[in-house]
Image (cartoon, rainbow, N blue to C red; front, side, top):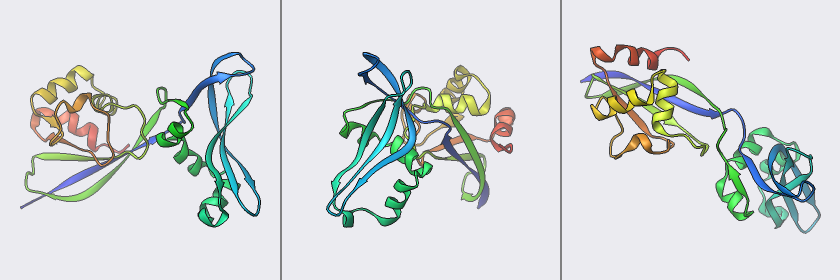
Length: 208
């Protein structure tokens, strides 16, 4: 029986995706920026809530519908208070909600969203003591491939990552061609802890 450290990488977006749409003032498609502010229209019988976006050129606004004609008793009280206070975390949640864009028939662009990685060390039990495991927490669907994540975090080229993958040193269980796939929440990346991989292991276990 062997005990091994397990590492958690939580991927946190540093900016929000943009919406690409026709601007009536600019007479062309422009990038609309998420203002992280909500508009709330409430009366006794119904509530409308929008997330406000602003044209990056002329500053004209477009409101993305979140709730439309919803009954006051059908909306969570705590969430409603967050709408009124322009809660930034709630704005982020809706900014990365692909279903919301689909319902509004909006073209969302995730390219250009930067991220940081918060690393934590966890106690875990594994039979194979020569295997290091990285659990990925990835709540927001930004465009990020597995090989890009590993290359950026470990400071080595994607071609080197590919070689390590082909050698079976880096792998994801039950995932074929996993390097080319998008990072998923709760994905586990395995790295064989071998002498020749010392630099890679050091890059993983270092304090971020």
